[in-house]
Image (cartoon, rainbow, N blue to C red; front, side, top):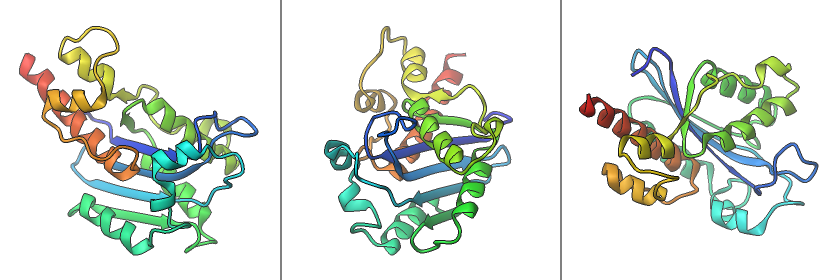
Length: 212
């Protein structure tokens, strides 16, 4: 454990087109688990309505948008139940824009606070960080505030392959999970992916300690 908070972060989006492009991707699901140095944990899951005009149907399919977006099919109760199951005894925070139409400012402030100063952990975390940074930009935050996290994220793939002495880009996340004995959940579910990333982080760091 570092002296900084860690946030395992994942997002689901409408495409892979960079969000700053006029036809760029929109983020419809943001999830993460924040672990503070004192051991406190906060698990969060946020859902946002999106414009599907430029959405990639394949991205929506892979991300489970039609099955999991509370604006299409899934219920708020389902999401809150899943969130509490992951959060356990820690704090659980859920937000759905449609349910709280006047609290988007609260959502932005809360998400920013959860990420402030944290080391972001994930599989290709840069993708998710760009998505969240764009949300802050859309909220008209000053430029120096749109990246509130620590400048150096923790990418599962290079960290895991390095500790196992694997050259090149390394195995898939499924194979990497097997190497560390961590079950890989159904991919492209933000909450499950965040929980997996945190479990992988802990396993990788434990392996580093064993090598010393």
